[in-house]
Image (tube, rainbow, N blue to C red; front, side, top):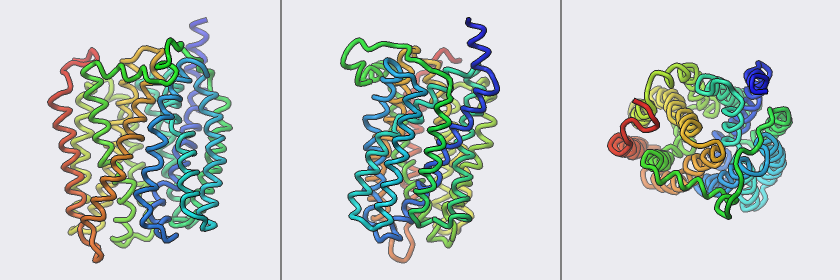
Length: 406
């Protein structure tokens, strides 16, 4: 029975299906998320940008842990992912329709919040499914995760050059289509049953994952992840606007350069994770992120090529940090808690961190960026200094040899 299971899990069919689902998972936000700031500005809602960017993190404060708990204890992860994805597609369609019809912005905000709650657990659930059904997770997971990167790239180019929807609700409609396709494909994912059981109300709510914070390596890791996610919010929130100020007519497409560099990083991850310690890879990611924001800061005086170079480096930084993080948790957490651990990672990186980040980055943008288009040097420099602080905390407090590594 075990050999039969291993054969099924390692089959090319399962790998391909996981890759396709990841492709549509990445394609969905690739259509609308990089275009959101410019879209809201075109609708006369530039004052709502920070508030809109807070909605997704608000949804991710609760649903990833609940979703992880359901996948650990009650519902198969594959079915939970598929049905929540299809339900989210319908809500996303109505949200962008309301925006296109110029309804009160609160309609868009409310529906986007519902969508965020439904989609909040999706990345963690997909990671759980993939790592449970791939025979060599450390080597194969980056390759299936590569599908989402390519999906984001394709969506960005379609948005800018085919749909010409850099500032149009059409980007949201296109995202709805890919969300539906992803949900339908997910119905064929391998069955991934719960491996744990609820023993208390804390288990039911997914709060047992917080018990991981009693261990020093987990505490430092999750704390730095949360802090790192605060300045990281600026990449999605203000980088496209900076491109537009610098004269880029197709900022959504240009933003996909980051995903292009992710492809290269993904191809390297399998080898690097077998040769280097987790601490080393995470420190590299943080150090490169400081350099990446320094490049965008220099674009304030040096011009667009520096900002584009920073965007290109972003993909490497993101991959080295967050793909390492997902595999690290799968290694270090018992099977019955893995879904909740991935949910806790989503809570930190897509919930609380970006929620604070939307406020901080919105305030920094309003404080530094002047009507004449200046102030980008100061904005990116402050954000880079915040990441340097994260790097220092991780280097000093993360325990040597954590996770059984040299």
